[in-house]
Image (cartoon, rainbow, N blue to C red; front, side):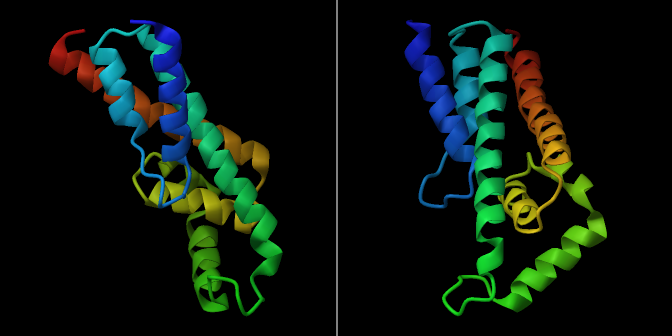
Length: 150
């Protein structure tokens, strides 16, 4: 199996899975597990590719949130001021540390957008998202290794 197309496919799937785009479903963990099970390359390289692409997708979410934050008072904006206020208070209550849970389905994508909307410190955002995504993908890879004995 040629590794380059597999890694490009994994990167694309993991990027899409890391974004909030609902019309582009993806599961970086499933794609990564498939490549690990097929022994399509170095396990470290496979996990690193999935994590890097997923973090890139989360960064896309952050940038979208940051760039639309000033549009929240417009009538056509899809989120009402009340929803933005609830998101703000929840984020402030739990703090930026909630980003460490970015590996969770649905919630993880939303929290990265909210961090952008609230203009959270990007360096801390990146560190926490990298840690969270690494944890999630690492747990899947270790679990697969334990189950299948790769």
